[in-house]
Image 1 (cartoon, rainbow, N blue to C red):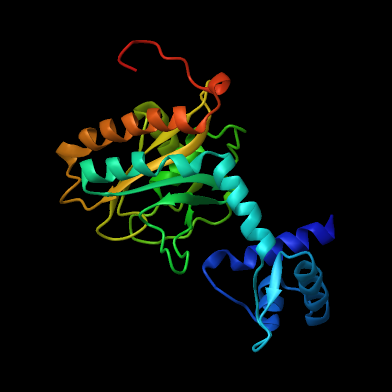
Image 2: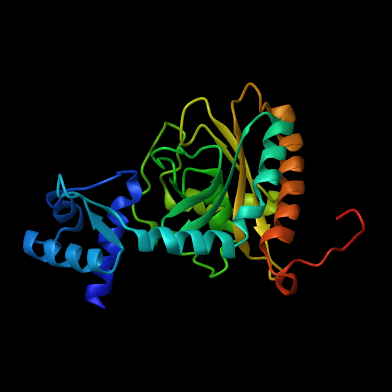
Length: 253
């Protein structure tokens, strides 16, 4: 189990957008000795999960990671959703993202926030984003122990940094049916997010629409939410197996 955790931790070092890392980088980020880091990196390289650059000796993610990522992407049906996200972005003139929960982060799977060259923007904090609030509010495993998130880092003066306040915010999110990020992750940014739910009422994905307070004014928030919800229902059909989808309760749904 220790070896598995160490291997996962080493692969996780590349989650911040770095294309390659040196042995000393990996040792520092994992907290392992240089010799242990070297043995683990070589083992992962032999398995294809890492590869070492011949000229620099630096490590980068290997072909096995690419293969598994592509398999997951297609088996989830994510290759089918681009038209729906593009249409929502067109209608709202906003940035649209789709995310899942990855431990303490919202991991963006598809959307306009991703940097196609570096991959930077893939992970977002749960506590300070509309995506994260949705993923917490309708968590399928009921992970209500918000203290397990650790200290809540302030990104702006509006970021919620108290676990009790975050719990109250999630109650409001569930009651409203959507989450709002009003300058909590970046100044001058306003985002609404809605859940993509299964039949059990559990969140499979979070869908966000991001703009500015000028465009997404208080008077227009409901308009943005309405369009986001319509897209979320379409994504339920594309991404969730028929037997696990929510039942439609009326012809309009």
